[in-house]
Length: 327
Image 1 (cartoon, rainbow, N blue to C red):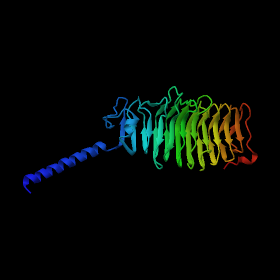
Image 2 (cartoon, helix red, strand yellow; image 1 turned 90 degrees about the horizontal axis):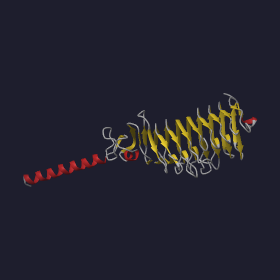
Image 3 (tube, rainbow, N blue to C red; image 1 turned 180 degrees about the horizontal axis):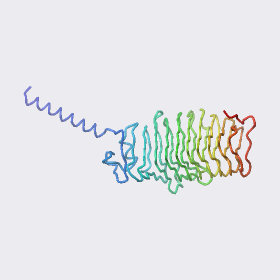
Image 4 (cartoon, rainbow, N blue to C red; image 1 turned 180 degrees about the vertical axis):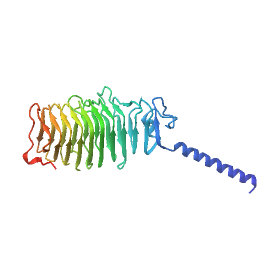
């Protein structure tokens, strides 16, 4: 082989390698990307060249990565199909305005963890807006320091509609969920897993008010146990109930610890169905239509440190056998 031919082969190899590296780098996904109100989705979503929307950034963010908000802006509805965090850590008001659609839809893998932090999710006029966050599948959903408001679909709009098809966990903290109702239905947080999906959920320092209901846990479409703890929260001024447990094949256990359940038009707490269990501790139930109600064999338990008084029709009754001693 001549020296000229050898040089041609080497040159071709170098060019091919460089092209492959260029393509690989162009297609690479970053573990952290950025969005800005003045960004452009044609950008690589770096800090110096941010994207404009969450939807534009998510395709350029690796699974398990983070989309960070740089400054105030409206960042659009997004569908999440992998583990990811969307974070606004004090950059100003970062919003999703999603009139006519879900604000965030989660269709992730069974082990994927999704985190939403510091985002305002707004249904606009709300009349055709189904949910602020609709969780269809995934491993865990964390919602922190968010405001979810005005999802008022005519059939029923929800702040958080958590309906996993497989076992999943929900964690909501320091979040306000408000004005999610069409006047008779819909609500703040709706947990209704599809069989065989079971759920473990914790709501901590959540304000769910002026919705159809504050919290509804529905086991009618699941066969696995649903465990929910609500702590240091306010469930108030809702059209229906503050806390509503509806059992079917699935057993439901709700623990209410140090909550204000007040001014709800029908009931402060409704346990509906033989497998629905609600336990109250250090909670205040007042100015509701009824304080506590058991229907269709629902089970109510109470420690001795609750304040259930001054409800409009009845405070309700908890059987003496279900009054629990203090530890």
